[in-house]
Amino acid sequence: MVSLVDTTEGIAADLGKIEADLKQAVAHTQDGGSNEQPDSGKAGKPEWCPDKFWDADKGEVRTTDLAQSYKNLESSHGRMANDLGSQRKLTDQLLNLKREIDLQQNGAPVKATPVTAQELLDNPDETLEKVISK
Image (cartoon, rainbow, N blue to C red; front, side, top):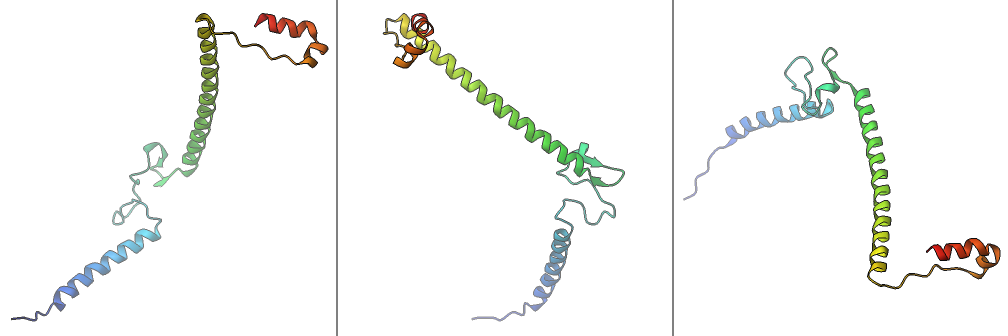
């Protein structure tokens, strides 16, 4: 046996709630989607904003300070990346030098310094000194 139930009363109540939710969502979207409390009457500090970037007297975010802080952060990050690259290059050079020293101590043949005929003709003393010192 199938019974038909009139559910229009429940739908009307749900429509009122849905309409209120939609109005709140539209108001939230129009104010930039900030995390401020809509019913508070005055602007409150958003949750995402640190205290040092909040101007309590004006009730707003110090966007200039926030932008300057971000710019300084990017600059610092770039400087650290450059320092890391330099450190890696130096580390590679030290490792290669250590490897060559270890190979020489263990009886591996010494790598010959490449010399061209043109170098011998142009600067024979310096070229020979370079080969001998190696």
